[in-house]
Image (cartoon, rainbow, N blue to C red; front, side, top):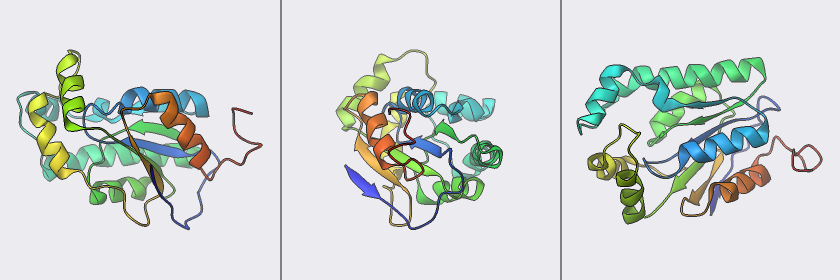
Length: 187
């Protein structure tokens, strides 16, 4: 487990968390569980892609930065709205590169990132085993090549995704500075 902290104070008591990583790491499952545990809204960034982006990825073509721009802006807007409302929220979003995460931090400067990772073979097995998702296994290697780990100044934690989602939620609950021991829902 790698923890990266910044000295930046959180902007609200209810946190905004982005569960990030390449396809197949368990982002959506973990993010839903974390949102329930925190009692905050959940959203999946996949639902914010345009039809053209979904069709492009489904055909085996990776998105480029011009494709991602409006999508990242929409994800940032969702985070901004949750921050402004004070409700916090959890978003499942690939957020593979530092500059993409910078866009998200523009919307929610105190956002906390949970980076899920897994071995390529495990990811490939997960992706090929699911039928309800548009992301083909052919794009896994391009995602792995694009992934930039959390860097100094980025609030968050990186975990290997082969552990269960409940474990990831427990780690985040212990890591979130917004919650003191007496404020945690598990008390």
